[in-house]
Image (cartoon, rainbow, N blue to C red; front, top):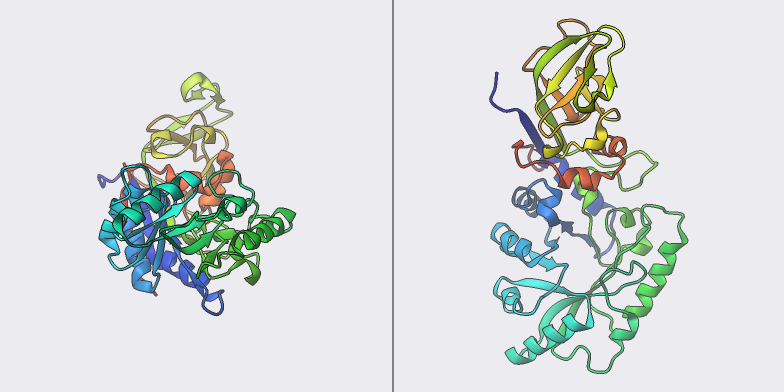
Length: 362
């Protein structure tokens, strides 16, 4: 038996294919960036960004300064925006590593402006305007304050859509109108409003730069419709033991699952410590030889029990692998079973998994 108990395979060819598919939807000078925050949604920012840069992606977004500093080592020539912006004492780290801050508040604008004036030259930055999320972001009124941008050269104006995954939501057009109004007096050289789902709202939302994240990693950007993106991840766990069971046996902590009739239980080397959520007990499925097998009993930290009674005797053995995420059961399927979203599933995948990177840019 191989020593690998849990294997996460990332298909970089599919991931690059997703970026190209999105980039090809754009017209004119509009380009697709790539959001690789949270270690590229848990899949490995160094591997992901390197593959995307080789494919022609020139702009990346990360969440924190630390992420930007690490990413700069991988893509030395790329444009990198840091979404959280600068904190006091970190200003010099940005130009030193050629990172671009996203300014989200009057306090950050003041901080960056003072630093720029101290250096004696204007400094580039993105301006983030809040158009309805009420999280980070400036107001249109903030941007109209006299002298607010002294020392700052805004090279990108951006905002974030709250309901882009619902094309029928009136919130989208309201936010777009606020976005246009906010930047009309400034006219930065580039504007960016759409992330993954926003790209599918149409050309009117594309502007100069779109910021796909989840769609790159295979998550459906248009829930309720067929997924246009290629799957990029496969998570497989090894079967440690197969046990014959019969009534009135129970399975797992708390004896929450009672066996009904003769059957077989496969115990698998993964659990909630690996990102297979505890809520999946009695709701989740794995796949063996194309057959869905239900997770039964409570999910443990390191172990999951699956009912494999539907498989013929001898069709599965100790040491075989089960797909937790894979063909016929993608990340969105597992997320739905867990009562969450694909973003959370990907970002919680365990570092205990042996990671393999497959595929090359087509």
